Image 1 (cartoon, one colour):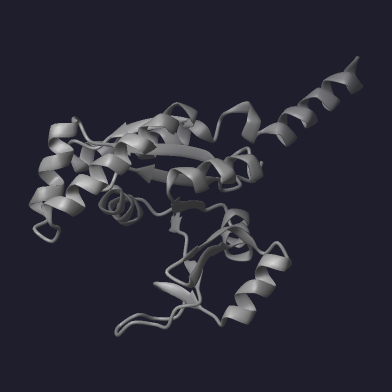
Image 2: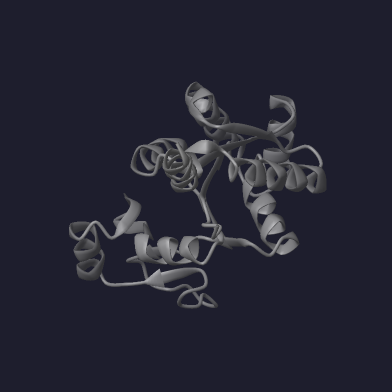
Length: 207
């Protein structure tokens, strides 16, 4: 049976370390692909087409919306950002598991559109540790940190709708845990419907 990839949606509080976690996962294991978003904003110095983003015009992006060519999209600071469906589906067909980092509302929309997607929420070991990590960045004011913590309180309301929570305490242990959960998710009946149906048909033919 050919192994098809699955869509993995990763969310988490700002400061929980989800970006670092996903990069380490892709570096450690071969079978993952980080989703590349499409945007209408101009490339920044050093950004490459197809690596950081797919850069397109507003007209092209809106055409993709009309064609249902995006897994999800949002308008932020007068620019569109979205995940191209074609890129994701091509990787999945190759058998690669595609990782998409997205906030909680978008993640729940994807779950409706792709019921077999795996939703993971990355959490710190404690809120005290989350505050410490945000302060440790040294790039944000106390006001911004306060806003991020307030946002985390709002996001906490939807965590129960995720498939798994991942506690990011020690990076290597967390990466292994995430990889193990994804491997297990491949064996869930919801992601093996075709195999199950074929087995049923073969059994019926023997009766």
